[in-house]
Picture (tube, rainbow, N blue to C red):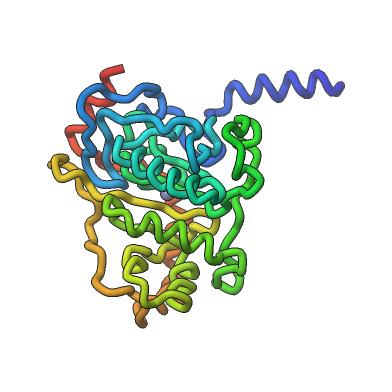
Length: 289
Ligand SMILES: [Zn+2]
């Protein structure tokens, strides 16, 4: 068969194969089809893994001290408090002439499930931030979309040794501290090896209480804000933040055989996402297109 007819055959076949995004996001998810925020005052509804958002705001593409990465994914929406928090930390870094924050996913225009590797990010209170704060971009006001689509994040965890890599240093710590000390922030999820590294290097720092160990997160950390007190249907988490720095024996569990099994289950859930049971108050948000 000639090259051209192979190409035609491939295109024809592709038309009959149900289309999914590379990360498993099904196209029949109503939340990914909506391109504009729901009007009204900002309100987070539900929990991060089963919820939605009214009155979202989009994070501008780039601003002082931050750059939005992978803009084509369209997950740039959040509660206005989340946008303000990112901008606030960005300004601190810009003033200190530090490299910019590289912002990964926020949420969809009305929150809701993406049915991708993220099970949270549904109430407009979560943002992923890449560890690499790209030094050559320090003094550039505008970085092209192409560059921001292409740059890869830096890995901070050795998956075989289950330990932090030397790349995780003072600057990364300083950025975690800026977010953790922000009163809007409920907690920050990091790989368990990063948490251990902080327990080794700065155990006395009160802000490390908000740094919580989790699976994955080799290349980024995940910042979660508290619910606004006025959002009566919003719940930040089901488990409250433990007292103390959590640098005790409870941290050892993450290196156990049981943890490896849980990790495998969590990877499997990410690869086969299911539609969560959303609060009834979210239903109207999918209809008002
Ligand atoms: Zn995340």
